[in-house]
Image (cartoon, one colour):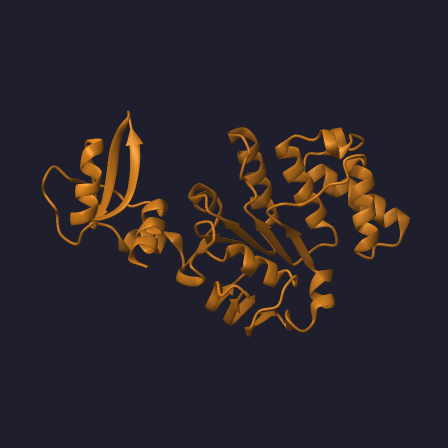
Length: 288
């Protein structure tokens, strides 16, 4: 269990990136949803022992994450939003190097570890290929590969599917799902579909504050009978936004399709809609 209590961080320019963050994250896939600038990356870097908070505590089992950084790094796998590669090295050579850094000194054990990770990340066929020639999806899979070295108990992935085409995205999400069965995996993203497809627990964060945390299905059920849909003209959007709680706008056949939150049937051509995770997410942001 990863336990976060009263975690706060304010940068020198006065931006409050984290404000009294409390989260309990058990084994499995945990989704952290939030818009750009919500504080997700600050939280991820803090959990990855790369920066200090101003206040608060973080514990991973018996380990104090903020005080026992070296011990935490031994069981940590981290895929940041942007990471550099040595373009002239092969995937195999680079993973071998990372294995040495993780403390796997025995050559036979190291070779076996690298071969296994190449296999599960579907990179065996390109093991000798230079990293500089990898596609976006291959780069992300290599990023997961390096994060898996050392049998980590905590894996953090920050915006992992941004820029991937649909096929690579689904391949990548399937890989994360398989990994997340026995360890704590935190998926930080602003893409609702990533969380909907993978995570049994989630949190929404915005402007440094956790707005909600728990089971996505519970949150969706709490909105049942309170979300309504209507197709409108483009010049009507502002009018509805000023008079109702519009939680999302989507184009359907070129026309705006709005979802509104309302305790009672709003009439005026609105029809009920079964709430999904995007409605939960957007409603949380709107209420905040």
